[in-house]
Amino acid sequence: QVQLVESGGGLVQPGGSLRLSCAASGSILSIYLMVWYRQAPGQQSELVATSSRSGRTNYADAEKGRFTISRDNAKNTVYLQMNSLNIEDTAVYYCNADVRITNFRRADYWGQGTQVTVSS
Image (cartoon, rainbow, N blue to C red):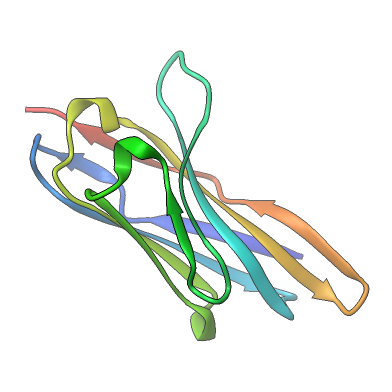
């Protein structure tokens, strides 16, 4: 089995920064796409940023220039550096990973989420 554990969430004032981490562990041969999603109260989940194994990244339009996704393949960890946070960034942030677990099988895994609250 594979586990994803997010950390780094918390309470921050508008304009502040946070760095989220998502560490994958378990029976992992390799990890392909790693993705950060978020879900605000009463709203649907939305994609925040993606990172391919080669390091190619993509961002939702609202996060371009403010958020940076990066990853350490040796540690099976993806990060999300969030700057210039505003109230609309308040949400539970989830990590998702496309994992090859055997030579013939790959599967999709989710973390439990980490709460980010932006408030003065």
